Amino acid sequence: MRIGELAARSDASVRSLRYYEEQGLLTSSRSASGQRHFTEAEVERVRFIQRLYAAGLSSRTICELLPCVDTPSEGNSDAALERMAQERNRLCGHIDELMRTRDALDGLMASARAPRESEALAQSVRARRGSSEGTSAPRVLES
Image (cartoon, rainbow, N blue to C red; front, side):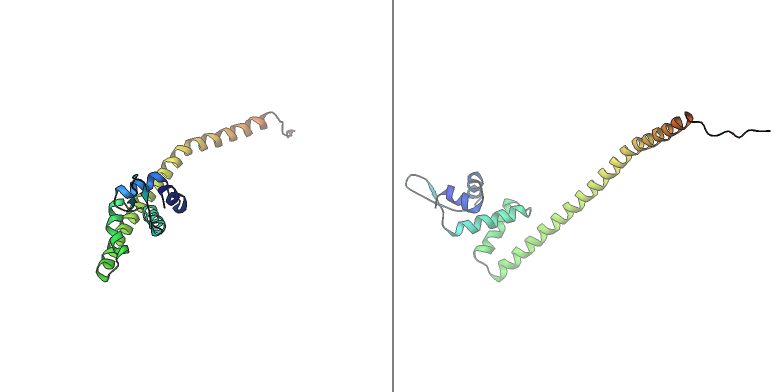
């Protein structure tokens, strides 16, 4: 199949497919006119590559893992699992860092809101006092 069909069937852009090929993640044969041709198996391979990218893996890491997928053995499967565990730990660290950043931002936002909320409360109290000054309460007459 040609690159446009592979793109349509794998939900990847033509540009992404060319990039995958440049990175050594995807292979194609060429026609006499230089057009890329891909096998049916490449549809699932592209989807798998996209899942790896979505999981946060780099193209270099994906290049390291694909041989383990292409020709699995006990040795390279263990190596692939170890590499995926490293990537998972890296992602967990990044998530922790993002959560700390989010919490710090929440604190800054709360600090920025505090003066506004205090001022709004003060205005509300002043407004209530001002409206009660215009009404007269019954007076107690002293004898």
